[in-house]
Amino acid sequence: MKKFILIMSLLCCLVPAYGHQLSTAYLTLEAAPNGKVAGQLQIRGFDLNHALQLDSDNNAQLSWLEVHSRTQKITQYMANNLSLSRSEQACQLLFDDQLKAAQRLNQGYVVAHFEAQCATAGALHVTYHAVFAHDGDHKLVINVLTPDDGAISHVLAFEEQTVSLDITSGSKFTTFVEYLYQGVLHIWIGLDHILFLLVLLITCVLVRNQGQWQVKHSRRKIIISTAWIVTAFTLAHSITLTATAMNWLVLDSRWVEVGIAISVLLSALNNIWPIVYRLAGITFAFGLLHGMGFAGVLSELGLPADLKLLSVLAFNLGVEVGQLSILAVALPILISLRTFSWYRLYFVRYSSLLIAVIALQWTVDRL
Image (cartoon, rainbow, N blue to C red; front, side, top):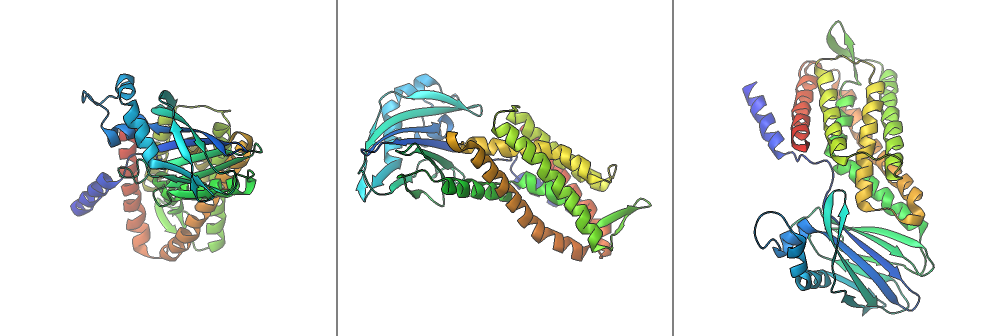
């Protein structure tokens, strides 16, 4: 038992407290028929300070005076790490010598405007390398307004730092696929959402009888129980994801993240000391919080103005696809393990305890 507690403690130290990717830059481009491109690049002050050591007085706080005094250094860094080309010809970027400040999700951003002259035909190639050297999870969200007033969205990450965009017309399909992919990706890397789903599935293959977990022999009943849980979670997070992303519902993201951690904690404890046996209800209630968490990620990605609802629906569908893929892997394994006595006597209790400890750490760190 002491060894088990030690292992749990070590694992908790390795688990990050945050639930969602935070380092995001934003590139907005407006392309004209004559090849001119008006652009705006926003990078977090925290990331620029990490790359350029802007905090001259070393007080761990970046002031606007410190940013302003390093304007040339910042714009040069941006110019060195961002390039546009069209028809195999490099676009000439000219950055404005006046930087601006902006706030996104309670984080300070440095905003630089620029103009570029590109060729008038061909796909627009965007290459971006900033920040990746010190943050492999960094992303660049690209939003392009095409000459015919269409919109294109794309996300660059460490694995893909160059993209080719057809700006002759805005593609709804391209935007849909991009946000679908981002939805799938987020559920796969969102450990808090995965653990919430798994901690509910652990006991779906069992039934509580006389104070003990017993084997649920009917696979049909297992599938029905699982379907209720998945449906409740899907409905709940779809409601709040859409409402929050469309700005119909606004809550402090910090408390949403705390609530998500608590939902994992309480669900894990319910496996050890069961109080709620019909899980669909609490799954729906907690799913509302998780939907707000998904919306926070979607806010980081940004939403094209004329394709806002389409992007929300695509992202939500991506979350469902990712969720079902996890379910398709986990449920058959749990069904096959449920008949072993150690699963009922030890695995349920100690795996839930481990998840509870991790969730408790998240809760404390997010406060």
